[in-house]
Length: 383
Image 1 (tube, helix red, strand yellow):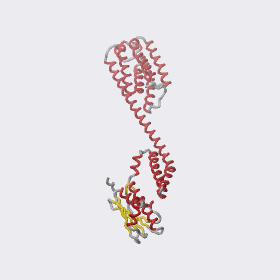
Image 2 (cartoon, one colour):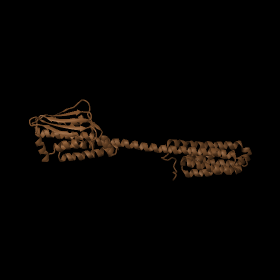
Image 3 (cartoon, helix red, strand yellow):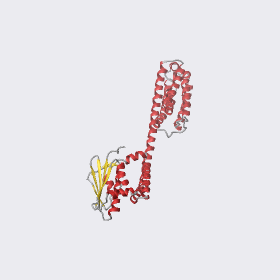
Image 4 (tube, one colour):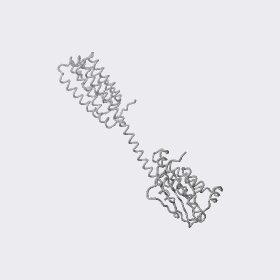
């Protein structure tokens, strides 16, 4: 880990920034408290002059750190060395009681400053290590394991570990917040692009698909290609994997609405007022079969013929009937058309419906019009 010798880092959260600000103030207040503590016991100190020199060095350091606002690890390791030296000076410059029992030290609570700083930088592990270092120095200053330095050491260890743990949590939450904001920005940008693409490219591809399907032939194939690319582009702009988008699009649709767009002016759609729900893929096949039947009406019944598309919802099945008032056709002629390669009935109609697990039949007679009856199960086709 390489520390940054900057006043602040981009990884700092508001909590960490507040703790660093509090540490700056604490460093000054701790120095004032150490100076006041020396004044209280100055009459008993072994070397008051040298003790004041130690406080003077700490004052210069405190002023520098207050102005520079440095947060890098290197400078606070140096501060740890300085605090350790100040603690050790207690043994020679302070009162005999402080030198032998460790009830207090020349720097006082100022010795906790580098522990807190390292905990903020390295987390709870760094805080634990720094507090153990100061603990070892305090024991070395007394020269024995005594209750006073050990009691103070326990407080320092808890301080460094708890503040370090808080810093770790703050850093983790800051990283999560940054990722959430990045995702939010990505979604906003994707929505903006989606609006642009939807207003232009997607609508153009959808138009090509519809026109190609209406014209038929080679244009129908181009229309299918446009539909595939529209689906892929839609998946891209909304950020959804293509299989998931296909599943979403394949949800139930109202067959009445789908057929209403396919029925021409020469035909009339007859359906109940209630929606007739069918899977999107099935609905597309049914619409294609109905379009093929209406195309046969235009070709064989003449331009004056009238057609009706009737939709019945029977619960488990949907029945779609296409009937016209044209001259009709014999069953032999239908079979002959299939054998000669004209696949309007055998493939476009019967083939599509049978692939859905349903059935289709022609009811016709010369002079009596033609009726195509298609039964489509709502459930999945049997495999």
